[in-house]
Picture 1 (cartoon, one colour):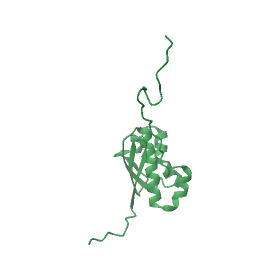
Picture 2 (picture 1 turned 45 degrees about the vertical axis):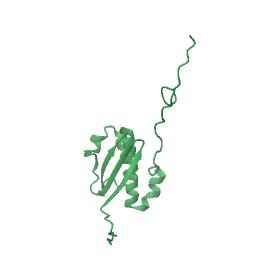
Picture 3 (picture 1 turned 30 degrees about the vertical axis):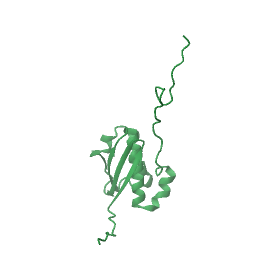
Picture 4 (picture 1 turned 90 degrees about the vertical axis):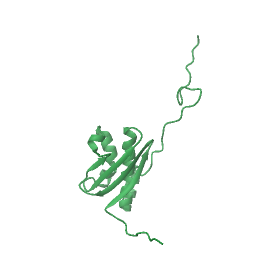
Length: 137
C-alpha cells in the first residue's frame, strides 16, 4: 500500500477564485511582488488601474505586495469578472498560506464569493425582465 507524503511544500500555495463566469487558478510563492496573469504582466492584462487595484487588493490589505509572487491562469467571463475572480483566488491563497490573515481579509469582504450572476432569459420576453412594449394603436 502506498503512503502519502505528509510534508507540505510551503514555498508555493494554490487556490481557486470564481466570479460570475470567470475562474482563476492562483499560485503564490515567495518573491519580489511580480503578478503574472495568463503569461502577461498585470498592467498588460488588466489595462485600467481600477481592475489592477481590484485584482491586487488582498495583497495590499495584508501588506505582502512586495514579498509574494503571484501567478494566475484565468478563463471565462469578461475583464471585470476576471479581476474579481483573481481577487477571490489571491485572498483564498493568502489564507492557505497564513491562517492568521483570514479575519483581516474577511472583514474587507475578499473571502466571500460574489454569487451574483446574469439572470436567465424568460420565454415570451425579449430579455430577462424586459417585457413587450405596449402600444395603443
